[in-house]
Length: 103
Image 1: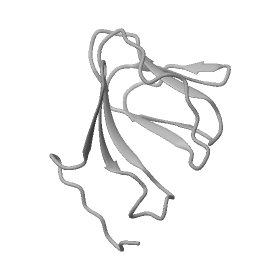
Image 2 (image 1 turned 30 degrees about the horizontal axis):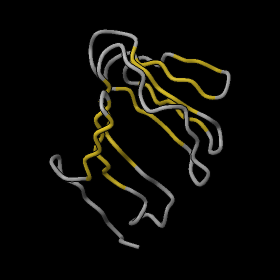
Image 3 (image 1 turned 90 degrees about the horizontal axis):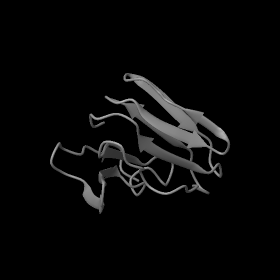
Image 4 (image 1 turned 90 degrees about the vertical axis):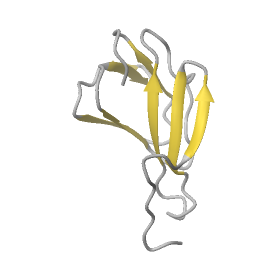
């Protein structure tokens, strides 16, 4: 496991999911699977990735602009910009955009 890992602004693994564009900054390979980080941009008025769960790690989002909507199991939220949203592992989650700007 690396002691220090730095990913530059144009680095990381690009992922194209149609209306969702992602860049994987950390896939867990340098953190012994403890942490993964990505940057995601969702197109306006679209659903993000389909509902899913992560068996091995929790999931969190820091909202830069939006607000996006997110749901975990039966709870829906709309975090505002400059807010952190977190859900525990093995809890089904999904995200979507409700407004015309991007996040």
